[in-house]
Image 1 (cartoon, rainbow, N blue to C red):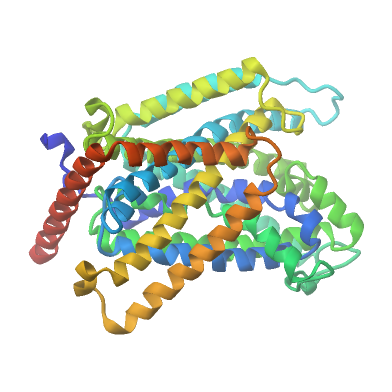
Image 2: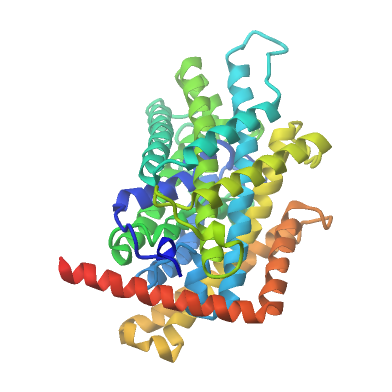
Length: 495
C-alpha cells in the first residue's frame, strides 16, 4: 500500500469541521422548506408531533453510529463500521447501499439547485404573469462546473463554506419562527398546542407520517466518513454525530411548530400549508415582507447547492475507500495534496451532471410536479433514501453484533451490554417499518423507491459473487483499522 493511501495521515481537522459536514448534508433549510407539506394530508395539524417522534427514531440509529465510531474510524463510513464487525461481505453491501444514497442525493440536489434558482428569479418578478426563467439544464451545467472547482480545495475551506451557507439559513428560519410566535400565529387559530397531539387521524396516521420526518435527518452520519482526517476521531466523530442530531432535532420541532401555527390549524390554514411551494418563503412574505421571502429562497438555493457539494464530498470519500481496499480503479484511492480524494469526488460530480442531462433530454421521470428539475430531484432523493434506510438497518445489526460477538467483549462494560443490544434492535424494527411504508406504495418497478432497491440488489449480488475480492477487501480493512487505532493511541499518549 502506498503512502498516499495510509488512513492515518494528516489527522488535523477539528470537531467543528466534521459537524459542519453533517449539518450541510442534512440541509436544514431544505428540510424545513419542503418536508412539511406532504405530511399535512395525512396528519393534519400534528406535523410537529411527527417530528418529535422522528427525532426519537433517528436517534436510535444515531446511537449505533455513536457506539461504533467510539472504537472504529475510517473513510468508508458504514462500509467500515459494518465490515469490521459483521464481516467483509456485509460491509461491502452496506457501503454500496450508502454510496447509492449519497450519489442519489448529490444528483438530486444539483437538479433542485436549478429549480430554486428559477423560483428565486420568479420571486424577483412578482408582477409578471410569465416570469423569465433559465433553462434548468444550463443551471445544472454551471453548478457542476463550480462544484468541480470547489472539490479541489482543502476540505476545511469547504467545511467553512458549507457551515456559512447553512448558518444563514438557520438564522433566517429562527428569525421567522420567533416573529410568527411573537405575533401569536395565524389570527384564526393562534398558538395552537394541539399540534403536539395525535389529532383526528389518531396514532396510526401520525406514525405513518413519521417516514417523511425520519428522512429529513438523512445525512447526519456524513461526518463518519471523515474519521481518518479528524483529530482524535474516537472522541470528535461521536460528538459531531450527537451534536448534529441535538441541534437539528430541536430546530426542526421548533420551526415546524412555528410554520404550522403560522399558516393556521383550521382547514384553510392547512390547505395553504399543503399547497405551498416554499413554506418558509410564503410565511416570510406574510409575516415580515417580500424582501425577507427573497432572503429565505436565496438561502434555500445556496443550501441546495451546499448539500450537493457535501454529498459529493462524502461519496468521493467512500469511493476512495472502496478503491483503496481493492474494489475499483486504484487511481480513485489516491489522496491528493489537499488531504482529500479529489479524483473520486470529480467522478461523482460528473456522474451527477450526466444523470441530470439524461433526465432533461429524455423527459424522464414525470412525477407530476410540473417541473422537470423537481421531478429529477424527487426521483433520485427518494431512491437514495431507500438505499440509506437499508444501510441504516445494516448499521443497527452491526451495533448489536458489536456487543454480543466474543471478539469485541473487551471493549464493553457489563452494564452497557443490554442497552447496546436493545436500542439497535428497536431501531432496526423502526427502519423496517419505514422501508415497508415506502416500498409497499410503489406501483411500478421503475418507481423511485424500487430503483433504490435495485441498486441495493446489485450490491448484494456483487458481495455474494465476488467472495475472493470481499475477503481481500476485508483483510485490508482490518489492517487499516488496526493501524488507525494504534496511531490514535500514540497521539493520545503523546499528549
